[in-house]
Image (cartoon, rainbow, N blue to C red; front, side):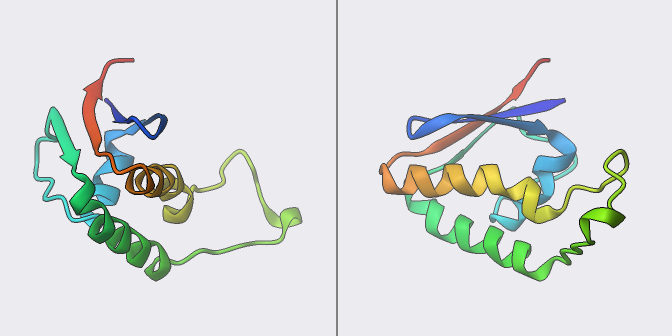
Length: 107
């Protein structure tokens, strides 16, 4: 299942539920067993959400092997890489004084 994040500040961001769940938890959303159909980060919630997500990114290991050592077919995506589009959206929404909404997407 996919989640689509919307904001008037920038283009939509889509990601798998399995990838979005830890990001949303780090950003302060209590995501339980069933992923919510709809959700929101209000403009007022964005500073704390950004701080929480940035803290999770900085706390996560980010192994950076030499390019010669990378097997691109089996390279793992780091939390930093997964968080980047959502953090970018959050910062742009904060600057634009707008919210971020999310919903389950089909596709």
